[in-house]
Length: 409
Image (spheres, rainbow, N blue to C red):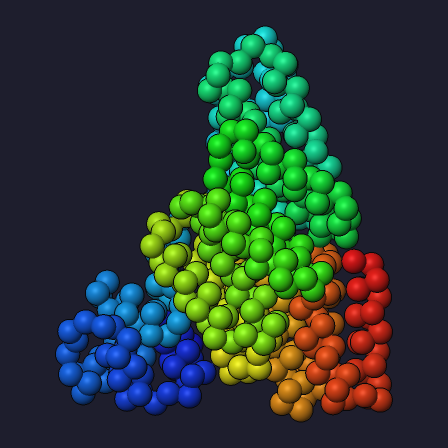
């Protein structure tokens, strides 16, 4: 039974089939893609069949070649052992919020207090993907005020720099939440503030994310040339921070929407190679960390938009699987929503309007959503329904829901 196979074995097969390759064609593609000495094709074919059956896991030599051949990142196809993402404040520091705030008001701030604040900021950035934006933004603004107040205390040079850097990350987070809630003017002003803080402390990560946010804002508003301009500036500023991958992904999404497939594919491969060269993050939950599984999420968006249905569907299934725990809890509900939209688009293109609308409604029903992003992605489904199912009661009802969503964003 395929359900008994390791996840990597099932995925090797599903990704091969999504490309329309036979096992022999996959082995030949592997030889062509590697650019290095490999066994003959018949030997590779035997190995490929063994991998798909889950009989033996590929060695490190082969995992990177397989991932590259199938157009993904090694740690996405063959993820390392699950690491603990426990950043709960009490467990990590032994302090609750009241005690941390009390210490922040003291005349001297010690290392234990700073560590508690670091963990708090990391936790807030990790909560971004799951918690409703309305509540989270209030807590973020409260902590941001506390960090600003710390600047009036007796701090060493390094402490002052670190508190400013932590304030920069929180400012980025507040800007993202403002944009999710549809407050675009405030989000842009907050983004500029974060950029200024990043420049003040010399943080390539904060500066890079500020440029990435500009690209995101431009993408969701349909200003694709603006995306390209923002990503050019962002790549130069980001340095070795993983935000460089997300910046490149935003560029690929813009190329896809401009109908520039060759440029899109070049950007996706550039992003894949950039992420391949980075170490696996210690906390994949943090919004300002690009984890390997997120690469498939980027590619899914591009393939959906250019009409590569089989590849888009395979990637959507993977995004939903990785984003959902064994008990059905969604770790990344906004990724799941966009994957559901993608499955809806594929269903609509294949003639199943009922399934398309069901996926579309499920996507916009969640509590955690980014209104501009969801409105942008949903437009792909709206276009297919409008072109092919005009007058269908289910389709028309859903399209009315989307119009209301766009107005609220």
